[in-house]
Length: 374
Image (cartoon, rainbow, N blue to C red; front, top):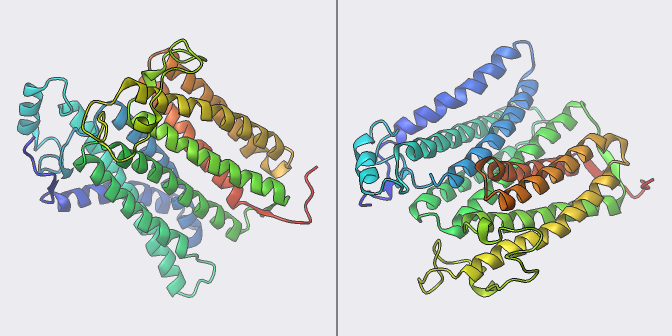
């Protein structure tokens, strides 16, 4: 492909497109809440932004799993245009040379819709940060500005990783960090939603024993590691390296090359010397994720059972259990049914939901030495 990796010609058109998409939820919030205070409107808008960002994470997984990440091989547009409509001739030429290659009309649209959604999320987060600072400037002491500002900075970082995902040709480490960045964005928005609910008096902090609070923090840490391992499996296309369960390739300990598999700085499908990645490396990537999943599943299930004993956390604890069951079901489906698209997308969605639930619990709770777990 001879197209420049970065082509800023369509930036203005893309910004307009992102603004138009972002205006839909903005107008909906303001029109649906005509008598509400600004604080209430911002609270609703933050919740909607969290929902749309969750959808963006799912669509990002769909983009990756349909091999559409290079559907438009330049950034931020598509062959220097704001949409695949203007790039039809370039896409048709690439598709004629490689009918099943990375560039097709369908894949180009999938990739650009993902970018439009990302720009809309960026616009919504910018709006939330602007309102936070405006309220603070007007003397509203209850308006927290640092979490919205941090979220704005992070979405810019996430956008940079999105650009690198394309320009570095799906470099596994970059794609994995881009996935992880999306989950961090979900966590930051969840924190804002919960803090706004606490500030408005709609709910009170839940007191947890120090041990249970620390156990929940540890659960989030273990989940983060597992998500990183899962992202490494997905971005290296190692899901089918083990196509049997519970064994892998008919063995409890198949041949694995850990050093090559977990060498981080290398191109997709290649080792550090530029040679094709050995199958034993893909096996190691898959099997480490599977073995770690057993431990994380047991730990988080036990944590959910303990959290259910706190009346105010019964609902999120149940959601945690349901999310874990979804992860188990979709993970098995990926192996047994040869990586069906729906199961693979839901597996990413389940991981994102678990992050949101655990962050929801932690942000709405605090440790208290006077609280004893019954």
